[in-house]
Length: 152
Image (cartoon, rainbow, N blue to C red):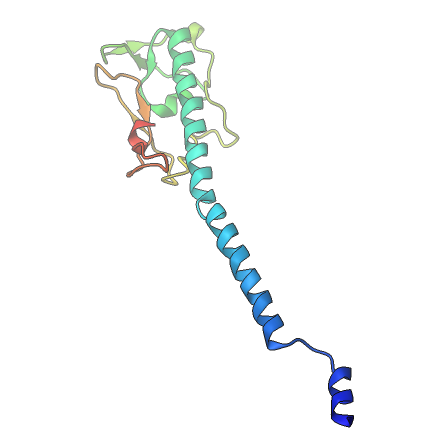
């Protein structure tokens, strides 16, 4: 009788209780971890698409105001009028300073934005017809949606 009384007064968890808690934690982890596994990649792809949209809008504004396409992506962030741009057939044309109202893309550091997928400030910018002014990412591979980055 004395042995039984001592066991009832002792506190702690049984092996079954500990195993149940560990099992619950494992099940919750199996549910939660896959939901967050691609978050960083999705964020980088979304940032790259947003940056491409901003750069493409800058190219369109540049062309609408100057009548020429930028000769380089860096011309979108230039603080002063570039001497030349590109016509739709890829030939150089002079930019009239009075028509230029840039920079057409503004970032705090005055540089072309970083492609979040490649981590670099470089973009695929076409200067040859028929794709003059086409702007894409230089990232290799496919996005999470199966579309190649080069087609974003």
